[in-house]
Amino acid sequence: MNRELFGEEHPENATILNNMATLAWRQREFERAAALQRQVREMDRRLLGPRHEYVGTDLVNLGNHLMLAGRVAEAEPHLREGLDLLMEIRGPDNLGTANAMAAWADWLVAVGRGEEAVEPARNALDARLARLDEGTPSVGYSRSTLGAALASVAAWGRAPSGGGL
Image 1: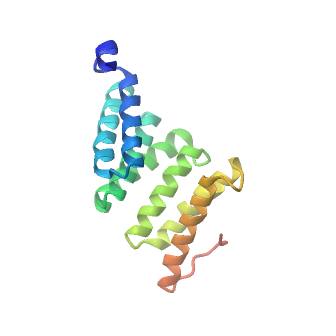
Image 2 (image 1 turned 60 degrees about the horizontal axis):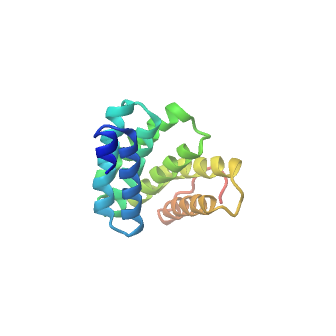
């Protein structure tokens, strides 16, 4: 119905598709969520341009959906590009960028690169702690991500520099 009202290339359609992707994710339909997120990314690229912050968020969301669908290798370029774009546009202290850093750290741990995951996991936690209350789920998620990175490093017998959790 929205497409009838607004036409095919209206930003509201990207929002609706994004909401549908979120619903699919919540229903644990990760392949469907990834397919819908691809549509969102393409529509946002056409409507907003390839260097828009929404495109960065779309890329991170797509990478997350692919990870959850078990398509870990396919997630890498989307997570990396999304993080780079959000760092450039929003900066390292933004909560959206923190989400992207945490997703990147999760990917690094998933592929056995826990030592590389420690820094983005720490940065995500620091950015969230600067803006959110300690009991916020996002802060807990960041602590968990950092813990997984540190545990991965400890399992290989390499201690990273810097503080812990």
